Image (cartoon, rainbow over all chains, first blue to last red; front, side, top):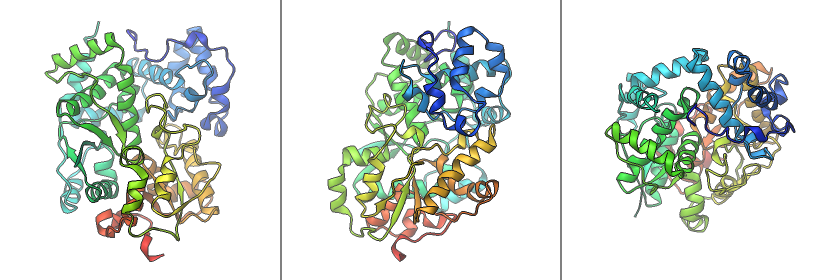
Length: 146
Length: 288
């Protein structure tokens, strides 16, 4: 995990059976998305191709592939690792950049607007707190990891 | 009284008031005390695509905060619960746990000591509260209604993180929960299909098609409503219902309810205490 890699320990065990792809909902609708091919490219060290491509952003993270893999490879987690690598090379999707900005500003993925706060109050729900520095402090602490 | 920390996450308290209202009132009615911890932050799910270690720290921090109060966690969002439960499994590794705790200490935060459980509210009702006890509380069984259940991918997956409490490829616990409220549930081939919301911004056509297929499957089978257990799934099927229909040249009019609204109705709670006014497609369970 020193190199941002949770779940990839078993990558070498992949024998390209394609069970991940054959059970993939995204693949059924968009056949160009092939998880087994992503694993193959990753195993071959073709990181640039993966990080610069669109494929890693098409995964819904539904975990079906991870559940199906006969070798117990955490395919979904590998996809997350690849996204994190893309993010660190400034190749993140626009959506992710927007999410990051919201998280860093408020500590929440969906910051509450004035109207949201009013709606909650009217419904008798407790107020929501925000923290504008928590996430950046956590990122800094994670970065300082050896 | 049973006492738990309520983990709301980011989406529910802003995008799903009907879920929060109905969950709180169902819990209250059943004698389950849900404690709010204002210090809880985002679970870490979106951060997994940025920095896996930072995401793990966020999850560990939330776990440690509940643990410090001596409370187990009950959550409403399948995504949050899955992330927290996965972190728990990862943190069984002593070396990783030490590294995480060192960071938490650096941040002036409590340590995580593996003393907290994490469950989705539906799993809790099924497993801990118990269906037999729940059935005895049901005063207004919804016998005339037929629902299509949508579990949401992270409800039972990854299965090891959720202690394999339900079959990840053919889950049944939510069906049983709704059946214990007296209603019927529909078996349909698309039942385990993803809502597609997470790729709404990056693969829109796939995302919309995934949502539309399930809406169509349940409409054809005459479902009175779809029942969900996650705020993100609800956005995909309710907020985006017309959009998904238009993309596919279909018109849908399928109400989408949270399981807590259904259980609450069967418990005899009033519509206003279950957030029915917030349903975008009107539905009145007792009027049918």
